[in-house]
Length: 422
Image (cartoon, rainbow, N blue to C red; front, side):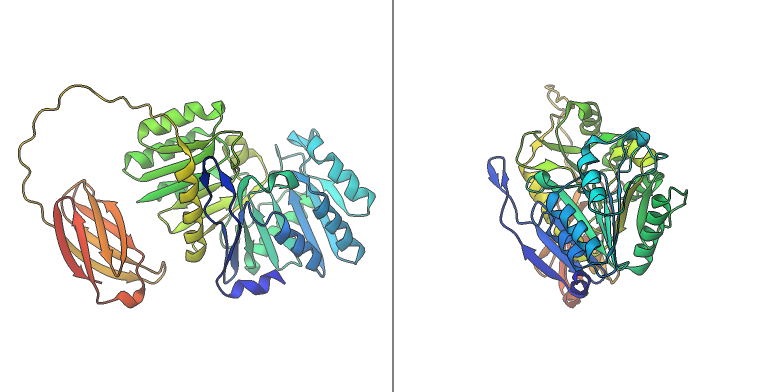
């Protein structure tokens, strides 16, 4: 079964998908211990199809939009071979009906699969999860819509942590029975209603870099938090599909120094993923959009994780998407006045020390030098940059291996250069 593959790191490459006027980077699937990352476009519904086909006792699906005949047939097949299948589909805004799911609902019901509409106490059920045999939970940003698989940037996390799986199943059963429940967060889950505080806490914790995917940006608290991060000189990057609905937020963000890039709505890549990647160390992936409804009123589910192999994969995918997207016009205006000549700057100096951080498998390189300058640490062929604060201090995360202990680390900070030892 799929869960057995999570004990070691594995990387699977796929064929490239065309970007506007450029070639896409390879997407990867990465597994490590009890978590696995699935990157779309790429495998499409195959991981989820295989989970249903290999299920031995149960398969519980919650889906915002289901329009995938092959997957629906697999659900029917599982039910017929004795697997307990339950499907909970979004029933529209506060239960007002969902034309997008009518066909799937009717097909499953006609073929003996237990299927219900989601509770009407939620504005929408936007959660996208599949739990196989009470052992593996797939937490998705994607809908199971076959026409979207080839163009939509999305992710899913396969989670075999028993505490997480139990929390998801317990909440599923309550929603299935239309019973109110306060969902358990398990180890690292983020539920809606009530996700706003968790997402703001994650954004506000950032020190160095913040990479964002989302489909919507219509929550003032989130926008303000991103602006505040940029004003703290955090390198904030946002990649989305363009829409005039978000132009007001984009103008505020770019005015604060956020780097916003977009794809046209008709581009060969559509940004549907929801990701908050903080300092290359922690990442949120889930169904929640940056809107008040999604964070406060819908049933949604996401996960926060810190698995290094998964984060490195997400960083690579994001970097490729960011490179091929179009910068949103900045609202800043340059001045044409001639700057006054500056007096000669005093000679700059710096000092450096370092220690190994076993939790994140990297080196903390501590720099004391000139204030408000870019600082770069280099050792063992690895290099990473950050800026010093108003006191001249910086903590640079350097992704060199632990075996580099004893190697020389060189730091440039402004015009100053200093060396130390890892």
